[in-house]
Image 1: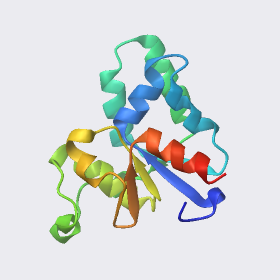
Image 2: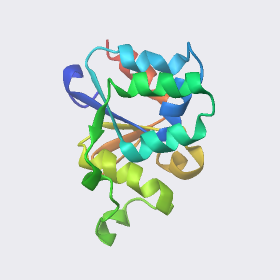
Image 3: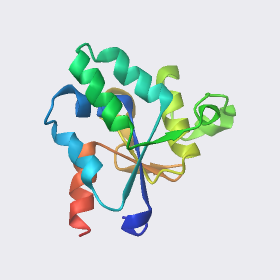
Image 4: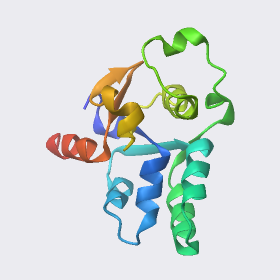
Length: 145
């Protein structure tokens, strides 16, 4: 871990939120139980997750999970970022607000299951944010105990 555990800031992409809310006992819900981890997301990511959850129970679980997450301010995710910002990372327009919000939130980690768009950046640090799949973060976090 790059910082002390109590300082660890972890940004959750929409697909992580979706997966955590999809089933009642979803394995990713363990993220909410980790001590020393501050979960962060954006309304953009939360809305994307909500759109893809069809069931009313899933929607309720998502709302409950979001209560324990720090939300990044709207202006942080607006995508009004200088073109030079994207020199290190090439992403489709729909994924840019996710990464911009993670940077604006000063996240240590961005957790995403989006292999197609973020996969080439997995286990790399870009603009101070290390991009990982949730399972890799959990392995890393547990190894630091």
